[in-house]
Image 1 (spheres, rainbow, N blue to C red):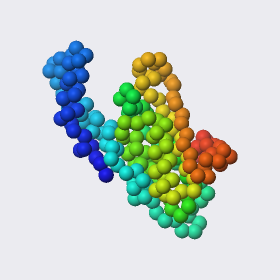
Image 2 (cartoon, helix red, strand yellow):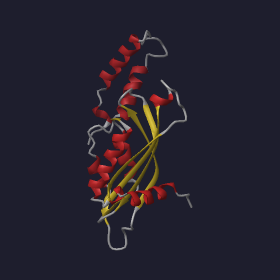
Image 3 (tube, rainbow, N blue to C red):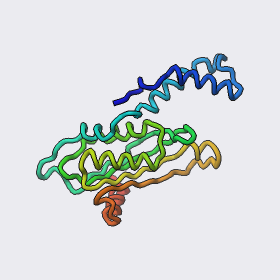
Image 4 (cartoon, rainbow, N blue to C red):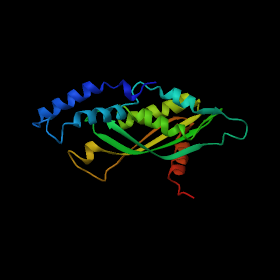
Length: 196
């Protein structure tokens, strides 16, 4: 498993100093002198998922389930995530919803956000993020079906170009029995169901 210590902070800081100079700033002025190091620390956090095996994270967080413990479908809603779009290195933030149909194992509920965070903590595309999460839970749990729905706002849309501050993007990735249109629709209805 990788960690934020794998990021070469000195190289990142040097690159940030060069970027500041390239845009006409003085990296040595009072307000910017610590910026290269701060950005290096930020990148170490944002990209801490590089090299992490998400399938192993799922397996480590799962337990075998006995009779009567599986249920028909498990839905975990509103898992907050943040990632960095690989096209402009701007953040995108949103919520992940995960549904799976267990076969013989279930995943601990606390493991779901850890897996989402690990996969999101690398240069990403929202579409690929959903696919990687679906694959990780399908393989790591040997689930009969998996559905991942992501709803995110992208910095490249909200802060540059079209500047659509209320726009979000929704993506779906499904595997196994939740790839069937009727089963997928049922899981999506559970994701959107009122609480309580």
